[in-house]
Length: 317
Image 1 (cartoon, one colour):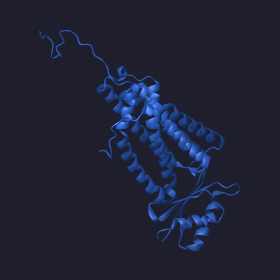
Image 2 (cartoon, one colour; image 1 turned 180 degrees about the vertical axis):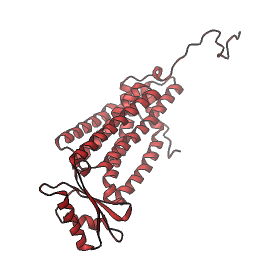
Image 3 (cartoon, one colour; image 1 turned 90 degrees about the vertical axis):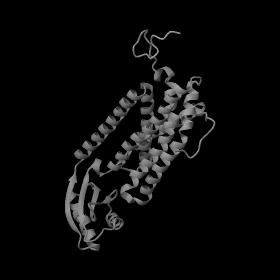
Image 4 (cartoon, one colour; image 1 turned 120 degrees about the vertical axis):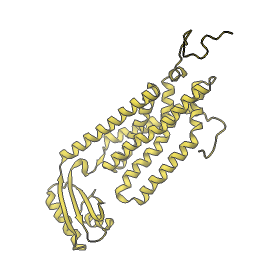
């Protein structure tokens, strides 16, 4: 399916240096903000108080957030779980207050507007648990990266695997850089979005790499630059359809998903936008600079005289 078909190849690789210079500057800025400002980690990583309360009727989450905010608590996560009447509240630890004191203060504030509110459970999430979650998240990220590299190296060639991983890590670091610069809350849903972006971004790279391999077999007189330009140009329509439809879905979560899905959708939006850029301008250019050739993708086999598998064996002209 195509929205349009471009008759003449666009010379993307002619501007590869400029595109990758912009990418490198953005990457360096993201790394700088990560080290200078750091991530604003959520309760899951830093530790805090977790409360589960139940209402007699569907709860108004915005009203609950406002009531807790009036108590002076910041970075509080409020979301439904199970049913619309069950609410989970996560609060960061406050110096000088115990978990029991926090939960009692919040429960009294909620009962001031609805006397039927019931406390189901309350617990303290210690920093040790948060550290374990951070380590497990980094392990998951590492396993995903290694798995993608092995897959691409087996399907294509090691130069494509290196190019795709550099491009994908570029996307991940830039997402983290945005969260560090604006000090948006980095929670487990955001970590899930980062892992999703890794898989989503590599999908676009695989499509372009597949077309490059096909072009090497089809167009014998084209050089590597022309092959890559043709591959990217011929897949632009498909790229617009795929990313456009995905972004519409993510945009609906961003606008109508509420506070629970806001940063998850925001991370996906950043990842999709930079994923297009990295797949087209970064991954393909790096593969070109690594010296990808027709011989790397097309293996020549030498026919042996008298080979029974050769249909022309024994023919006399």
